[in-house]
Image (cartoon, rainbow, N blue to C red; front, side):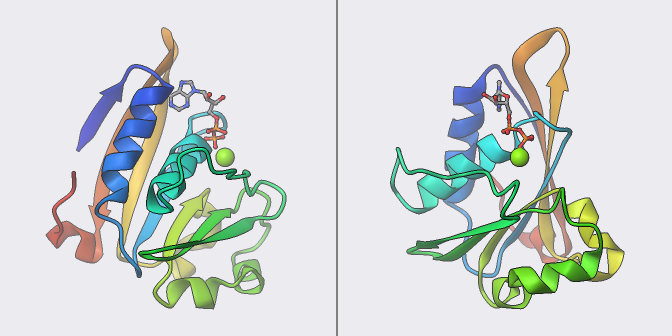
Length: 151
Ligand code: ADP
Ligand code: MG
């Protein structure tokens, strides 16, 4: 499923719609280059899930993970860019995250094939060189996500 958004506000509004279908146990992979908008989309998802529009949602670039308590469950926001080996994820609470958390992962490629959960929603963000504010956002369901209604 593909969406062409014109600006950041449209990315955020798409995230708001997505948040409505997320529940404990869901894993969302965020793919895209640096600056593609992974954190922007994750931030909007977290604010929507916490029902707190202006909430501070720092990028986990340096901490690698941040957690939030939402009505739907604990949200785990990972940014694995700086992780050097897949097994380092265990030190970040991966096992607890997989136990009914709502898990958002930037740079999921760092998990490798062995640790990546087979059921996840992959969201790809791609920039458009001609229109700096525009993004193509692609939703690809994997595993049990194939049986779910997306937005
Ligand atoms: P990433 O986490 O993928 O490295 P960020 O979300 O940190 O990317 O940064 C995306 C940057 O692009 C932000 O500065 C944001 O303001 C800007 N931006 C411009 N247009 C959009 C858009 N349509 N969607 C998301 N971000 C956008
Ligand atoms: Mg980021």
